[in-house]
Image (cartoon, rainbow, N blue to C red):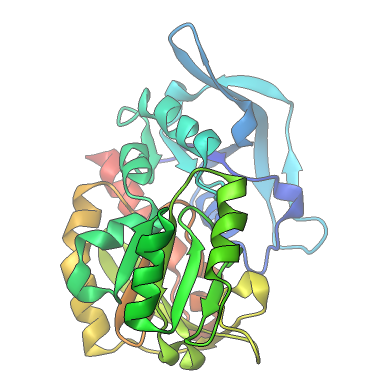
Length: 314
């Protein structure tokens, strides 16, 4: 059955087709006979009881520098689509949150992937708090004395914005570092959000593993190794992806969190694991499809569409 698909994502002209999971999702949908409509988050609107978006019919192809064609610019009623993808990148700010509230108005009659209610309620660095035995020691606080006490207890810590992404604003403060006060002042001057502090995990030198789950089940993993002299393993900042398998501990983690992800309609999820410790559960715009397909030949995009098609058929 051909489906009408709308994709809410960042500007398509700027993406890297060799690494962008949204492109791979669109490519697989097109190969399965589904029609595509594309719009950017700023074009989403609520108008007198209708959820609309201004955008374009879309076709894609795997050709560098010439990877898409757009049809006529038009306004669409999103309730007329079978599926809407919520795929713009964080930061998870009020703009992002507002899109989840608007898309809530058409879900589940129109299937929004991932379920916007739980994308909003389960930000990447907060959902892990429900599984404290799987995570490294963690504190979320704006209060400087609380952060100082955490650093005094653990010595070597990672400090980062609670709603950041892509490795931006991530700092390692070792036992001899004296910058906690200055960083707290810096972040406090930018916004009113808390910070997240975690005990530093030396195993990050061997990689930060991204495990992909579809409908709550793990389908594979890639390892992201930090560049020399870096603590951050994000590919945005020079991390190197490499082929890797999954350990018994990682399967245990997936078995613990998978049923909750399935129950809350989180079809495509990427979790981050360092040395057997769960550090993030990425619901907003997870990545890794292209790398996993290249390393292991696993067509995760097809698995995702099979899960969606099954839900639509039922």
